[in-house]
Image (cartoon, rainbow, N blue to C red):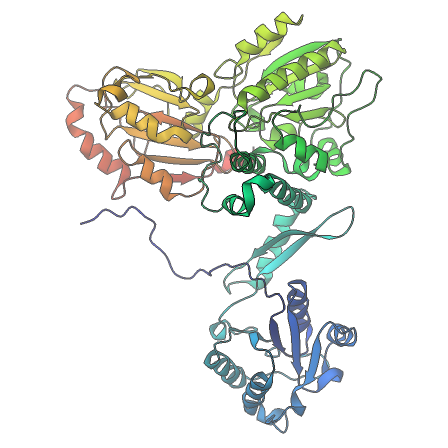
Length: 623
């Protein structure tokens, strides 16, 4: 019997589509407030709206009458149509009238919405189910999708509770829309859920979408010599599911098409890592600077003349003041802190890191993986810059950060170089210490909670455990300037933690398992059995944390099956991965325990070759 490796579809969901009915005809039957809502949504989607109302203009709601008078839509009296019923007592015949109306139109009707199945205020008229059913059948006969209000069994499609975001400053619409559907199980509740979602998003999230759209346009632009065909190749469709897939280092010989591809990858990284509020503030000049790897960081350090950094929006000020009530303390002149922000959750910041960010910093130079929840702690007036360590630009961005820190410190500012995890655990802290020292500054290194320990803990994996793991080793999946590194060999009682290796998972798996001489040279010791447990931990400690557990043999398929990846991620290999599942197993290191590995895996994984756990413990989510 074949093992099931892909999710089993469970019916009852809707196929959610984003439909653009530009210049398409949408027919709305009814004159009530629901019809007005449908008309407004269709008009915002650039559709042509036709409305049939029993009793004509006088029987329509105020909004429909106004829109008809403004020429935004066309409103027809259903009673005056050929083949219409003589009166409301014979509404079944309306199907014939609607059919004739559709047939005699010079342009086809693409969607039909029946809204008068609920009573219209002022008229008391309400279409019967039999009449709505007849109209729905004729629409299907003409292959026109139909929606019937309050009769979901007659609907080919439904309307979600939607929100279109506007620019809070200009009041103009942005490209961002969100929608919520309960699949007929609670329309009013869908509206409440939508409102809750909107209230928890930054006010300028729609502006951020518009700015990223402009960034994509700039990134896709190619030199004229590349030709129009080259521009067709530059697209996000079919791109790898992780924005961290390695790319070659940039060279002076880079072609226009290669340049455009690289820039598109940078846009993906910005979309993944940069705070939404920062994206929303990008100017055209900053966009070009971000996409041009030769220029400095976006933004400016406060000048020696005393000019302050760009003012934060009122929203940012309100967030900081209401959540934290923090203020700056007068710093000594010209200091550099190298601080660790921990794995991501702001509650895991050390007291020293919290003080550096909230009381001492004039300028924060942050790694791109530091989450927005940590950056939100920084008080108003403190400039924050985010490293542009995109694929192919890591070395250049590192140099930019160090130069910016020295330049600011020379002018008497306190600079906080903010890193994820602990600065000394693959955080390049040593390089920065030496650089700053050579330029006259002895930096203060503030330790942080290392993701190498915290990540497995949040995933329920103890890196050491009596009876399962006697030791652990931490290594990186990529060496300096993208070179491959030698990984340790297999020891049953040892946990292997690999940082920065998910994007190179296939190479890592080959190095760990291969008996081939060329591959085994990338491993210092015996090969790992293919059934060795492994876990990939994504966004450890954050609310959207995901843990994918399997064996070395199946983990690549498991990762592919979940679709889009969630950087940052880490890899944990060894028998500590499942030792706390269920009732736990502390007999892994007993003599002869290897003979029971197959049975252990069956107990741990069940009938499927992998296990996926999403989200944090609820207590941590509310911390």
